[in-house]
Length: 305
Image 1 (cartoon, helix red, strand yellow):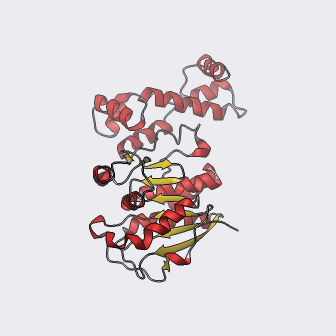
Image 2 (tube, helix red, strand yellow):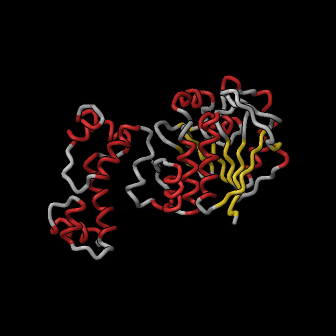
Image 3 (cartoon, helix red, strand yellow):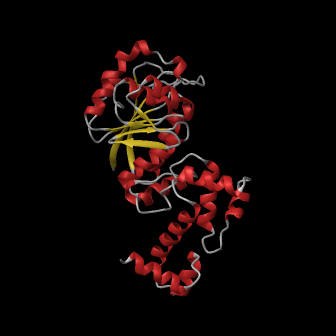
């Protein structure tokens, strides 16, 4: 059963991965059991990519009327070749799509298109790190945020670009079908889920990972796999070849919390899950890295108020 429609908006000189990454997520969703009606529209008859590959059989904008249940994804384009003389060809359509209440999402430099259409005025947003300063300067009414995979403002999403379009698409899948299904799609694509999502806001496994620092993602993955051991900052620092002091600073700036806080939250999260099983408290305490069952009982008491 088709549960929704995804409309991919294609500019000329579109960046191929910006488009293909998001397309693949929704295609794989269909392979995993949740099918989408995928449409491709453009203000141009045969739009091309920044890498030279061209498209055919792309529908004109006027052939598709967006409604509130649709998802519209605008893939990033090569800004230097973006023809602003053609604004009249697409801005009214995009504004109408937003007015309908549809979910509007930009990948990479497509945030400039949302800004040009006035959809980001007074809103938090982001784009590729190389363009955040330019975006803010060109559109001072925006609130451009750096070091985020993607930013949500109501039903408008902007992402940092390139592969983060995959993260954003997985988030949108999770919104509609839940965290477990989004994880299944990610597994099918052999990619990590790096961002937090609405259905799993309480899950520390998905929180504090919406940054774009790959080294800190490595550290977080290591911590998750080794909770049952004593973990030292020195050990984590060696993992990514920096000093413990630099790791402490970088981890806090990327995630918003300290390494110690992160480890504690992970242990609490794992304990909550294991306490639902029939395992003995001593085994659960050991698996979660608690020094004793007394320490685990203290956590349970605090969690229950």
